[in-house]
Image (tube, rainbow, N blue to C red; front, top):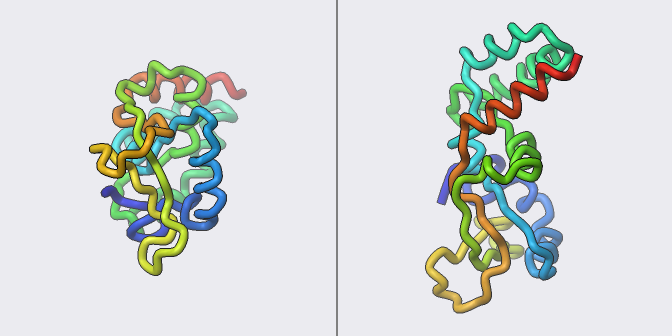
Length: 159
């Protein structure tokens, strides 16, 4: 149970198309899930980090500033978070350098497709109570400093 980004029980991608999410989860393809909780715990960028990024004076840092104006306002008003979240950036960074993912475990993961209150809810069977074969590697801890280092390198390089 963690803060979700669209409704109380679901993250956006699973909520808008839980049937597709279920197909992917049950496909047998090796996958890693980096949940919204990892984003809010480890990818949040605060005002001082935004100022540091702006000081790079590159096209990348300007783009970062521009695209995050709305995110910053939205996060404060809706999620009560004092910073910007970077779910896609974190996921791509982990795909590029798995050292960023400090801890992960394989669990059985499924998604609720019919629930009135829980449509799109991703069930992660941490204790194996369902007795089903683990199908997804779930990211449980991120090296925030290494993530930030990679993000800064990319933003400095885009000129």
